[in-house]
Image (tube, rainbow, N blue to C red; front, side, top):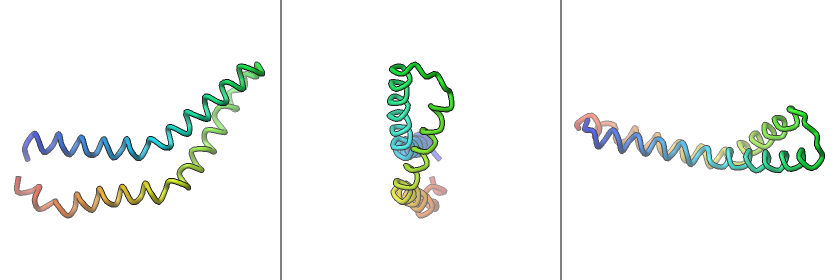
Length: 90
């Protein structure tokens, strides 16, 4: 295995990780900002008010985006396994 192969494979793995985590983190960030604005306006400083809605939104996002995320992971893994003999020759 060459250095170029390892860096390219690492880049692909990081890109898949970023693509899979972006919707979940984006929705959690959006809900966090909305709740922070709500807390600033109402001056309610309850810590659980920030965590519970984020957890609920992330769970809903996993249900909604789950099939899409699974397809990307299956595609990445099947490409890796199909090209494994080629990788071993390098």
